[in-house]
Length: 505
Image (cartoon, rainbow, N blue to C red; front, side):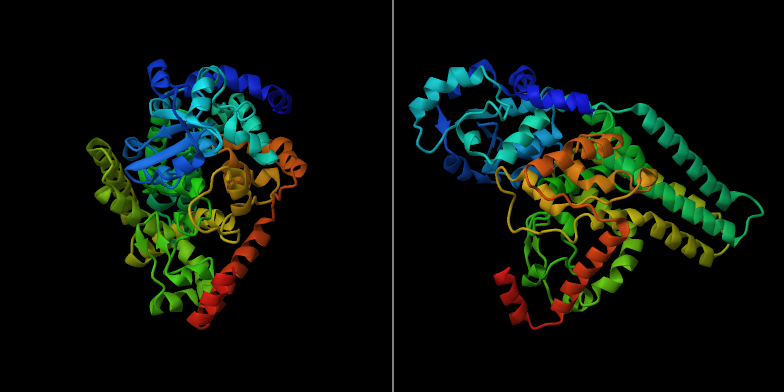
């Protein structure tokens, strides 16, 4: 990897101009129609809502108003960037060629120009601009010239990474074989004749481990980081998510894409919006409006009481969090307005298959007490993944509002942290120990993340003076516990005092 990446840094501009120009260049007819049109970021910022959403990618302006509701990754991820630059988020999820860049090109409306450029400047430069790389940060004109050095350097780096996204399928074949054996062992512990309660509970532990580990595969598939084909990775996610875990792949991608693209945003990120049971910051005591859930997260007397001991309830909540994911999946499948009927029926059907096999397995246990214990133990072990997800974000910086233009690197570094662990423990964390790298470049296969961190991300951060945090698993747990405790203690204070503290930051 290192030799390739060194070459990538040197040749990033040429690689981008060769691979990305075709992908992001609008059709000739569209380019001709928009050639005389130039827009400033102030112009783009006026189009920042549903039904009127413009974005910029590599100094080109796109009106995506008609595409928002059709976006396979969910509408919210685009709406939160409406009126802003989405270059880094777009490249994080999409390659320089394929359907996504072609679709984007069809919504091209003009060039991004500096505030002191007029439309005639844009027209005279249009032909030249369309023949250069629209996706290379190093060759972008207008806005990119004033970018912070680490932002331009990151875009140059990412432009040369496409060759690194190839997946080693042997890794997943071995992993699949191991997990199939774990599942078979769990079924044997429950269904084999002559087994007792302790063997049954061992089966619960094994089933929980199966759930935890297969969720990691669903995570990879949701990011398109296995086959890098939306259709094929959706099918993988349908199997490991809906069928093996009872967690809908559409629910997961809808929430998780928003989380990635607005990491630790107070109003946008659903992964830190757990009121009324958890509040990762006293800012939620102001009854914040959730842009994702489209409702106010009211901090009432019940919420105040629940939050006041959240540092003690956190782990018990994580132990039963899977039950909430079942409910959230079913709610989305029943209420989502943008989901096609065929997909809704497919996911409902596979969810029914999950509950059928789980109920059949549990019914093999001899008593009601064992059945309840089996469900609680298996879900608690499977709930380890919920703790692992929270560790990388709950204690990190939280910002107000929607994500800002050109802040991708800063947002991910401040909103995530790695978990320092030896290589032999990588299986346990399933790639989540490299959250910083994963958030910066989510298409990178997880079996390459350790090397990517060592050879690319850490040197990049050191060169540009950027923080890269990586506590141990136990230290991360302590950080999260202290964060929750601080909010719990604040919940016991007077509302006026807490509001004053929030105003002061």
